[in-house]
Image (cartoon, rainbow, N blue to C red; front, side):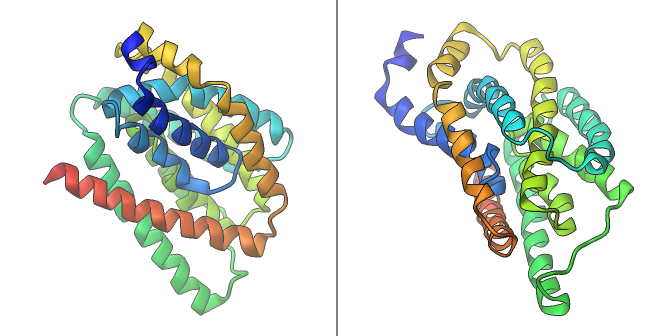
Amino acid sequence: MSGLLSDPWFYTAAIPAVILVGLSKGGFGGAVGFVGVPLMALTIPPVQAAAILLPILCLMDIVSVWTWWGVYDRKMLVDMMPGAVIGIGLGWLTAALVTEEMVRLIVGVVALIFVLRWIYLQFRHGADHAAEPNRIAAAFWGTVAGFTSFVAHVGGPPFQVYALPIRLDPKVLSGTAAIFFAVTNALKLVPYFALGQFDSTNLTASFALMPLAPLATIAGAWLVRRMRPEVFYPFTYATVAVVAVKLLWDGLAGLM
C-alpha cells in the first residue's frame, strides 16, 4: 500500500484524472470524464484504476446533485433509470466475459456514429432541431449506459446519445445527468465490493485523492452556468467526438 501512495508517477496521472472527471461531473465537458480510468491506467492496472475512482465518483455525484439541486428532467430519469439498473446487472453477470477493450470499441463506434449523425442533422434541420423524447430509446440507451458504466466507467457517451438530441437547457441536462449517474454509481458499489475490488490499498488511494473531487465538480458546474446553449452543445458534441476516437483507438489497440 505504501508503495502506491509514495509513487510520484501515480499522482502525476491520478490528480489530472480526478480533476478532469470532476469537471465532467459538474457538467463541463460532457463525456470527457471517461479519461479518468485510461489516464490512471498509465501507472496502475485499469481494473485497479476503476476501483480507486468509484468512491471518488460517488463523492463527486453527491456534490454534483447538491450543485444542481432541483434542476432536472423527471421524465428522462423515469424513462432511463430502469434500463440503467438492468445494464448494471448485465455488467455484473458478464464481468468475467466482457473485456474493457471490447466495451471501449463498441462505445467508440456508437459515439462516433452519433456525432456524425448530429453533424448531418445540423445541415439538414439547423442548429435548433430537437428530438422528441422516446421511452423505448430511453430504456435502451439507459441499459447501455448502465452496462458500459459498470465495466469501464464509460456511461457518459451512451447517456448523451439519447439525452443530447432532446436539447434540454444545459443546466437541466447537467442536473439530470448528475442524478442518473449518482444512482448508477451508488448501485455499482455492491457488485464492485462483491468482486473484491475494494481492498485497503485501493480505498486508501481513493481517500487520498478525494479532496480534489468537490473542488473540480463545483468548478465544472460554475463553467456550465456561464455557457450559452449555442456554445454548450457544439462544445459537448466535440468532446464526445474526441472521446469516440480515443475509445476506438484504445479498443482496437487492446484487441490486436
